[in-house]
Amino acid sequence: MSQQQFPEPTVGALIFNKKNEILLIKSHKWRGKYVMPGGHIELGERMVDALKREIKEETGLNIHDIEFIGFQEFIFDHVFWKKRHFIFFDFSCRTKSTKVKLNSEGQEHVWVPIKKALRLPLEPYTRRTIILYSKKHIKK
Image (cartoon, rainbow, N blue to C red; front, side, top):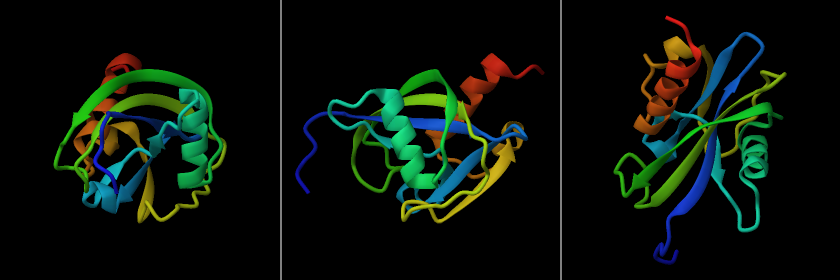
């Protein structure tokens, strides 16, 4: 694989089901931690289209009611299995199904209430997204 020359734009989502639980996936790429599903934006692809495609590829789910949460910089952090520079664009969305079909990137998944998600072994960028979402949307 060639040396990375530019940051890679990526999308990810907190996917909510009808019970208001979020989907988290345990991934070997994130050293066995739970992450929100997502992936790279292809050249010429809009972020929302990339999000729909990546979620479908990684989970088999269709998503709707997509809302932007925020972005994060990821610069050569050891929490990922390869040395990479990413720009994460994080969203929330909903799905009608809870039947998840993981691809090879995910080893297991859970549906969990968002407050309980913070008790799981999360990679730090997913944790920050959950906290940011919670500050904006969840009453104490």
